[in-house]
Image 1: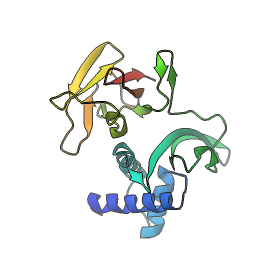
Image 2: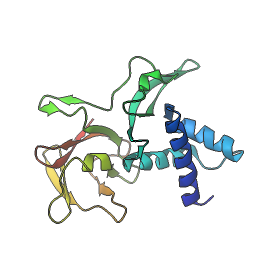
Image 3: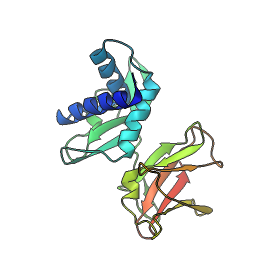
Image 4: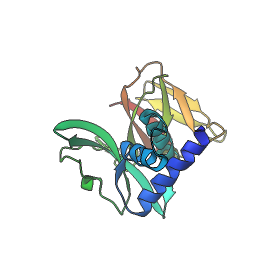
Length: 197
């Protein structure tokens, strides 16, 4: 299956689940897609990454924002973590059937301000890159030249323009693949701030 066709099928399933006010994980979408297509269509990691891209694009369905929360889940006595996707103002991610009470929130408060509506936890990719979520970029103003200022814990800053698809991706040599970082939009100074999580 071509990537463009795969993306379309995944988007259709996500939209369908959102219209029915379903709470889901990327694995739920993988299972739904395989059931729909009658077997293995793509590796779960590929599907998960496409769902991440949909989330990064700041998808809006039925006039609600599409959100996610990192949750502690339990199935058959096994504990694991996964992002649970849900519709803001309509769904509660704690209602996901496998959710445990000791969930990790993707929002975070800081002593210097309340970033609870403007922060996201991300993992550094295997290529040592970081994708800045568009929903955070939309909260700050770009410079006159269209570049966004990304600050790494106040140690150094990078100015980066969006690519042709509107995404801002940066190389992060000072982090290792799978490192987790908190990304937040500091609207007071119009910067994206990245800190180790």
